[in-house]
Amino acid sequence: MNLRTFLSLFLGLQLTLTTSALALTAKQSGRVLDLPARPKHALAGSVFLNKIKNLSPAKREKAIVAEILKGNVPNFQRFLYPVERRLTTGPYRGQTLRFWAVPDYLAVGSDNDYVRVPLNLYSVKTLARQLDLSLPTSKMVDDIYAQAKVKLKPAPLPASKAMTSATNILKHHGLVQKQLNRSNWRPGLLVAGHKKDVVQSRRLAKKPRAIAIYGWHQKNSTPIQPLSTVHSADYADYSHGIRLVSNAVEIGTKTLDLRDVLSQSPTASLLSDEGVIPQPYYISGRSTFPMASK
Image 1 (cartoon, helix red, strand yellow):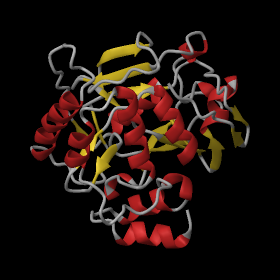
Image 2 (tube, rainbow, N blue to C red):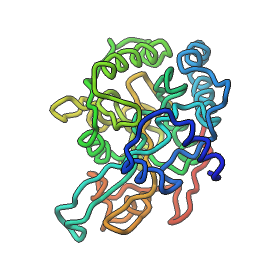
Image 3 (tube, rainbow, N blue to C red):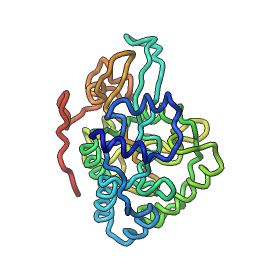
């Protein structure tokens, strides 16, 4: 991201961030979504979803990814939020572990009219490759929920054949927004509890054509959805959220790559409850994601 693009994003950011939060999230390009400024005539989120609601799932996915990559996302989602945990065991005991996450699940639209959009694993891989980001692990999802400034209550819709429909995506988004409006939420705060997360998992090494989901935490911090790979990689429904994280991880004063941390046994347990999670498309210092599609 060049300076002109960054300044355009910053000056157009219509939200209040504390000085400390801004310093943490904006000091490196890997902690800001590397997207162009939102186009002047970009569609509002509700308008966009209604426009694509009758497309096939595959064409809808393609349209959503294209819309995100051209910059039609809320400004408040562009700055990643720091998530910290004090390490109490192991060789890094006493040091602070820090990673950065999108403050809410990825959405299409403006600050005033946006819609959170679920995506299948093929679409997520495309975005991760383009933006140099990763999916969180289930342990990172737990950390995000623990530190969320706003914790929402899961609001499942009745099970039906419409689970994957754009109508249900819009309906569930409306339920979430009603909760937000009754909370102390403001744009840019870390919010959690309202979606299941699409995550990376060791299980996918044995089941590569599946998608891993986890979360939808309740107020007692117990997730409704245990880690699961029951769905195929091309599946996405209204309950799924995409919360990407930076590949930059700090342990004390050291900055490491998340993919290196997760692929090595001495460090994997810091961010994974499953031990080492293979990173098949990553060689230390270089991502090699294929352009997967379905």
